[in-house]
Amino acid sequence: QLSIDDIRVLCDAHSKPLELHFQYGTAGFRTLGNTLDSVLFRVGILAGLRSKRLDGKTIGVMVTASHNPEADNGVKLVDPRGEMLEAAWETHATVLANASTTDDFLHALDLFVRNVKIDLSKPSRVVYARDTRPSGVALISSLEDGLKAIGAEARDAGVTTTPILHYLVKAINTKGTKESYGDDSEDGYFKKLSDSFKKLVAGRPKITPLVIDCANGVGAPIAAKLVEYLGESIPLILENTSITTLGALNNACGADFVKTMQKLPPSLVEVLKPGQRACSLDGDADRLMYYYLDDRGYFSMLDGDKIAALVAAFIVDLVKLAGLESTIKVGVVQTAYANGASTRYLAKRLPVKCVPTGVKHLHHAAEHYNIGVYFEANGHGTVLFSPQAQETLANHEPSTPAQSTALNHLVNLTHLINQTVGDALSDMLLVEVVLAHKSYTGVEWNSLYADLPNRLVKVVVSDRNAFRTEDAERRLISPSGLQAKIDELVRRYDGGRSFVRPSGTEDVVRVYAEAILKTQADELAFRVAGLVY
Ligand code: NG1
Ligand code: ZN
Image 1 (cartoon, rainbow, N blue to C red):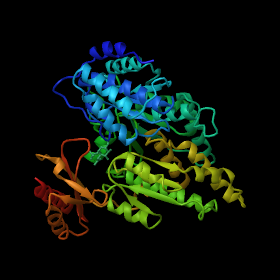
Image 2 (cartoon, rainbow, N blue to C red; image 1 turned 90 degrees about the vertical axis):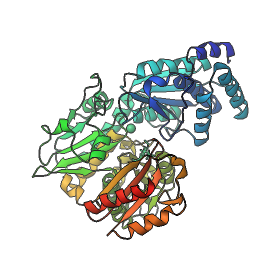
Image 3 (spheres, rainbow, N blue to C red; image 1 turned 120 degrees about the vertical axis):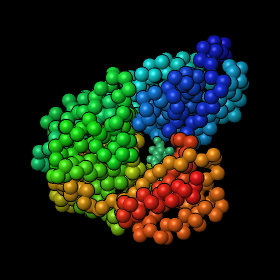
Image 4 (cartoon, protein in one colour; image 1 turned 135 degrees about the horizontal axis):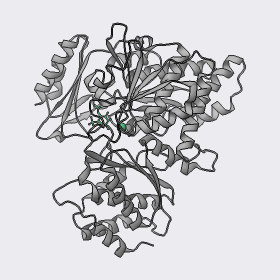
């Protein structure tokens, strides 16, 4: 039973800084790590209550700020099926995080418990983890106080990646059922990935060494463990593994650096050989960027759109080969930031849908297909197999050996892919499987289509909420008249495309532009930014 006195004492020890306002946004709560003590305590209570509301199902809590600078930190909740927190609770989280005093908080809590009809006598279970950020240690202990205050049964998953935490949540909640997602341990995760990978590349030519830039984050120790499980099946060379060097995390390395700067992390200049593939993870290992140096040493980047193109085309072919073309429909989900050339390439082969920015939009749209492939250009994405698709794969009787092989590959892909959330390591193995099957090097993969030159700029405005969008954020409905001016500019550029939207994670408006020539894409972006400013 809940003891208000216990909560009060602990809450007093984690008081909210008066001047700060916190918001549960697309990436959970995220700001400077040393300001988040009260938020973590309250999130602990909220996670416990969410579990009670869902009849004691296990809820996940991940402490990370992903690709952000080392001083930042954040926290997000994971729902029982391994998915992002239900949207309505994002608002509850924000309200509870901003109650200014202990009394206000207890009052808000009481109101919340009654409004949402939470039966406090139900059990509550929470599993939590953190990335390698120095502020994470203290934040985890604030979280633990919150869990203690609400009487939750707590399981510490230690220092691990965001996608492993999502995996654990789903594995715990499906344990012993026929939907079992795997053993609920890191070992279970590594076994699931490595066993299916080995089956998928069996009989293929030996894979050439792949360099992994671990962003000096949690991807480093986790990739090191994965290497043990993968054995000889793929040679992996781990770089940027300094997780205890202060200031190193995401600094001039990692997936976000590569995508934004469109260049090699300086630390890899001496490491990467012409022709060799490399990839970068981000600070919590849920984003992945590939790249290589060509024979002349020029850098080429293979982003989330290129991964989507590679993977979607491969899956479509397997579905055809398995004779399941008429029963299993494959589709792709992108956002407005997807390179126009990738959309054109994909739309020739399968249905493509565009949704607003944010993983929850992509994930939900992907659930509408039998097999839904979703990737953000920044390298976050995965593939979802609907329950019917998995059932079809399990029960289909192949009529030829070729059909049987394709069917087996598809089944193994359902195990290799972390279907709960984008997972850099799982996605990396997926890419390697496709490259091995197609006998592609980075060059052939890159030539599936040529990226349109593009430019992304940030504009600081007095009120980003004045910018409202429609059509999956591709058009502005306010400020009035602005979209017409953008249209008028875009018309003057060959292959021009541009859109403006408020960021959900930073206090800025983002301007994206694309054109046939790099100089034109840059010019269009800056002229549209001029209209916004
Ligand atoms: P915002 O700040 O809303 O543009 C950014 C990324 C998203 C997504 C979220 C969550 C871009 C242009 N935007 O969103 O794709 O990853 O952060 O982390 O990359
Ligand atoms: Zn991340």
